[in-house]
Length: 309
Image 1: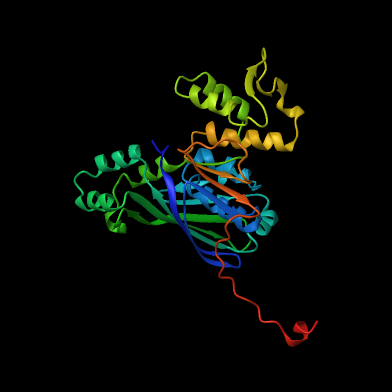
Image 2: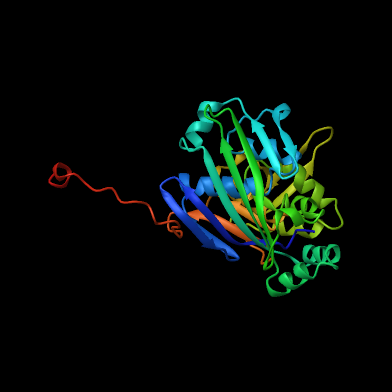
């Protein structure tokens, strides 16, 4: 249902020394990096599309090195609370910052837009708002406790099209809408590519994506998934096990899997793409020559002794 919904705008109030980050998204977005700023942007975006779904929380945080405690995950409506083991790592990952906030605007795809109109047929404000601007936006905020042991997060400030949804008038299906959007964002890491490729290969609907995946890295070689007897499926590159190749080849395969096998409409890559990119997927990637955002850091005034060195 969410396969063609993409991000149209992000607004981050503060990110380390960078402040007032506002970014108008395109089909292909290249940001400067990889560096701590781009890494935290991908972390914030990923939380918006993972933390409302219990099954996605642990794998998502694990991909960033957080050792989340599954038994300490609490979901309550639009609020969440999680705890983790490796507090010092989390403190370093966050740069000591305890408050995080991002506003995301999503351009709704046709299936999800049609579903919303069906649910809100009697609400003229929603119908008119979506006619003017077919988007859904929200703010996601997270606060970490003083000891960096636990984080509490909440979704708020919902808007459909031009209609700001008041707290007292939230539709009863708003939580379902947010849940539909969970999983439309994919990081290139943490996927079991061989199992995913086998699943797509044996699927009537997914076989086309499997073929695209197999042919998406022509400069590297031809991919194929095989299932040995009584063993897990293996991925072959040029009829050799992928494990026999180096980092560059494996990077290309990870990217291709995220783009073609994940089923997500928004994909974050840690480096410039080396695989083919379909028009239906919005790609975010980092590169040393990428666009720098949030250039409002305060300049430090040098002391006279520093100026004459």
